[in-house]
Image (cartoon, rainbow, N blue to C red; front, side):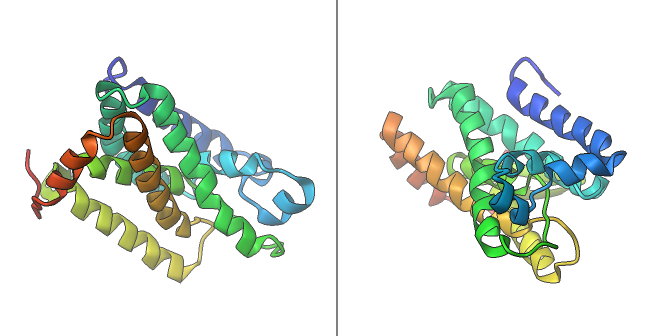
Amino acid sequence: MNFTSTPITILLILTNVLLFFISSSDKNIIDKTIMWPYYVKRNKEYYRMITSGFLHADFMHLFFNMFTLYFFGRNIELLFGGLELGGSWAYLGLYFGGLIISDIPCYFKYQDAYGYRSLGASGAVSAVVFATILFSPWSSIYLYAAIKISAAVYAVLFIAYCMYMAKKGHDNVNHDAHLWGALFGLAFTLILVASIHPEYLQGIIEELKRPSLFGRD
């Protein structure tokens, strides 16, 4: 990990890992910080929309999200800085905005369901993934250090997996947040580019016209 070039991404990953191990050993922490729409509505505990994003159901859930954040987060952090699109502040806005916006549909859907709870960085990670894809959709990613695919293909697989898991519905992971996080990431980044450097929009469109299933290094 290169901390000096992408400090926000590394700090986010380290924070998620640290809080995973802390919360895993104390159920009270999870109860007080998990996304629980019933209590958000009645006790105005809106902070849960953020704190729940730093909880994970198990190690594989944590690994999958952090693996994705590591590859895509570094790219968008460098892009926001190098292209003068708000730098670290824009990146933080993207990440935390993804957390909050992706929990809003969950809140309205389950605000009267006492037994429903959810956790995970799904919304934030999806926002980062789809923001990055706008700039480099056909860059290469190596799954398990061996399978080469493009970033756009990985994103489609990422969303498909989450939608499949959402239909199973046997855990506390807010899989639906991936879709809302992805939509937020696209909207946020397009608005950001259009507001600060609208001349970049044409380049984004041209890049999307040159697809590559396995990506280009």
